[in-house]
Length: 208
Ligand code: ADP
Ligand code: MG
Ligand code: MG
Image (cartoon, rainbow, N blue to C red; front, side, top):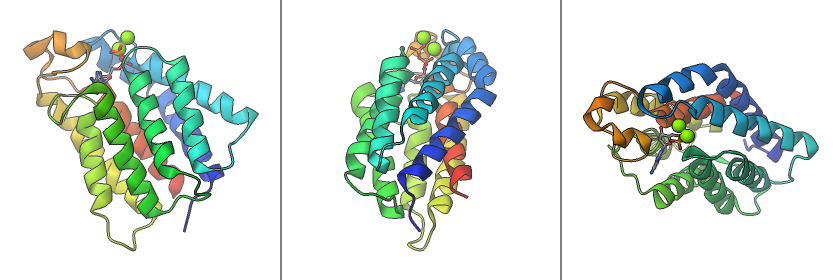
């Protein structure tokens, strides 16, 4: 079963709710090893996406992803806005003119999103960034059986992203603000890895 542009819009609205619910958690995580604005940045960005979708829901999944990308890039400063913006932009390009999202296209779009984040931010696995949630998420999505549903794939991705975010607790950050702390950042979860896991969980729940 596929997912229309309305389905993708619904997933983004669900993500906005989850981000709002976890706003202070993300602020606390970023306060420990960064500048404390990640919850605010994410919440502002996703609130703006929901408003943009109220004006018009684009006709294709790619159009919706592109709207999310341009909104995040224009409304969210710092590291996460351009990085998530690039993720949605690359996903949008990969989705092309398909009017419905199926599992192979979803997996390809997730891979494109990861590639975009890495091209833009130059982080590799183990640098303690959102990439540590995204890499295992994409691998888990790719490993799903051929008959998996979109919800199954997103749930596997979200489960893997949760473990990936957890793994950042023990890592020395090598990218972004947290890298300024070096060893002193060990013992804290990366806020962007946590927000990536939250977004994927919201998408998975929306797909059920
Ligand atoms: P800022 O650090 O500019 O205040 P945010 O707090 O919104 O921006 O986002 C911080 C998150 O961005 C980090 O937790 C990390 O996951 C992610 N991040 C920062 N730099 C990079 C990078 N070069 N590559 C991938 N992710 C990064
Ligand atoms: Mg910050
Ligand atoms: Mg900041």
